[in-house]
Length: 338
Image (cartoon, rainbow, N blue to C red):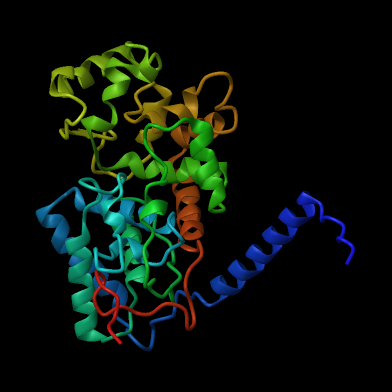
């Protein structure tokens, strides 16, 4: 039998993209903001009540819950896999480097799930709880609100390797843009979603190299504002080592308020994380696509809020499990037993 003619690589790539797009479109059509209106009509109010209670005890919790949606959706889609604990068949994503001793807020999600199981047993998925918790947290911090589409189902597996490939605070701009593009998020989405850093804290270990040994040079990051560098060195002394877990405000001007001052900080070369500042200051013109967006958001909170809400909806639609896929876990930490 004669060999067939090879299919051009470009055509193969186009076909793959078309199939993925069609599959994604079909899945997203099954998501709806009214999904639980009949089966669990108080789902939003329950999520909000539990988070308000948690916030009273821990002001950091809002930022932590927003971050959990990122860390779930970037690994095989928004399927609640991040919430699974270790088991004989599961290597938990919580143990991956970007999550261990860093991702937090899981007990709050347990409380939300318990309240919903009490009201509507077996109805509301952990994946949906994650995206609802993120929206509620942004709103409670003073940020925008949006209609969350619902109907996701929960994964029965996790991806430890996928979690180890999450966007990292020490990565170059081109790597970060590629990771966002790989899940269907463009430059406007990337810059807007980075704006979640307008609230919350980061440990010294994530910025230590910027203060003392940037890119192995033995010098600080040249893009850091001098006064800000001195303040960070006092907070994160080199003598504490690279394991220093002391916390620093991601947005010193208004650390617990969801606003656009995060971008004003970057314009002043006061982005705390390397992944923040590179959007404006990456060398050799690498920031040509992102710097204008940073400046627009710094000048208009309204535009930032609008873009952030749109990007969160888009991120929430990454590869959801719907219909008969997956399951609705009774406990977010473990798969259901047959």
